[in-house]
Amino acid sequence: MTRRPGFLVYGLLAAFVLGSAAPFYWSFLLGSHTAQVAAQGVPPLLPGGHFLDNASRVIDTVPFWKALGNSVLVSSVCATSTVVFGTLAGYAFAKLRFRGRSALLAGVVATMAVPTQLGVVPLFILMSKLGWTGTTWSIIFPTLVTAFGVFFMRQYLVDAVPDELIEAARMDGCSQIGIVWNVVAPAARPAAAILWLFTFMATWTDFFWPFIALPADNPTIQVALNQLQSGFFKDYSLVLTGATLATVPLLILFVLTGRQLVAGIMQGAVKG
Image 1 (tube, helix red, strand yellow):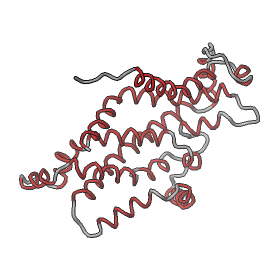
Image 2 (cartoon, rainbow, N blue to C red):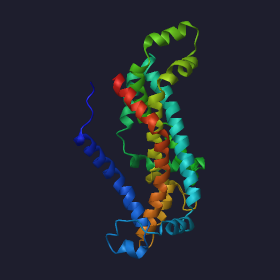
Image 3 (tube, rainbow, N blue to C red):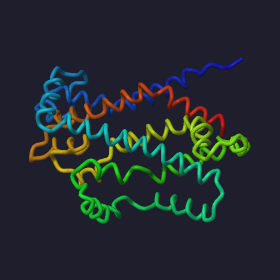
């Protein structure tokens, strides 16, 4: 018989959930009070009744809806392109035999150790020469594919797609594109779902490069939040209301795709 988890397991899980939700609740708590209450120190532990008023102030202070649309567009395009190119490159590194494969893979992995800050100046010059500075293309183009995405899909596809299955598809007359579409893509679906979610979240929360490349009137959501704390006096109720509003889309995304995410993680764990 399978033994059910005891009180200690449920207690640890509850503590972990509460600890993970505490920052979001704290942001909502301060955002539901006035600036005077937020500036006094520790606010009451129960929410106030000013969250909608503060949300309206956020929308009026910064181009919130434009920033939200830019973040949704950039994150969706980057996550989708990372999955597509990562799957193609990962399949090539995992299953195809060609000269220099190991050296190329080592070069891809080595780029993960290079800090992003080192490439900011040449990247900005490149975007300026292309005429993309100040547009969302300057944010989308550099992250259409990532070294982590290629390496992640390569590691998954090494064992997820048997060589015998690929040879059988070739004997049936399947081209390389047909093998990728009919054999590799279905097998890579769990890993692709995880990579898409992680890439979407990483792009959504990215601040450094969008802050440099985008102007104040065409920001992403993180750059727009930075505009809320400009000036000598920081209205923490306003800032944390904006942070709460920026977190809500991520929570909705994880609620909608949580089952697929857990299924992908469990399938990878069982397979390994």
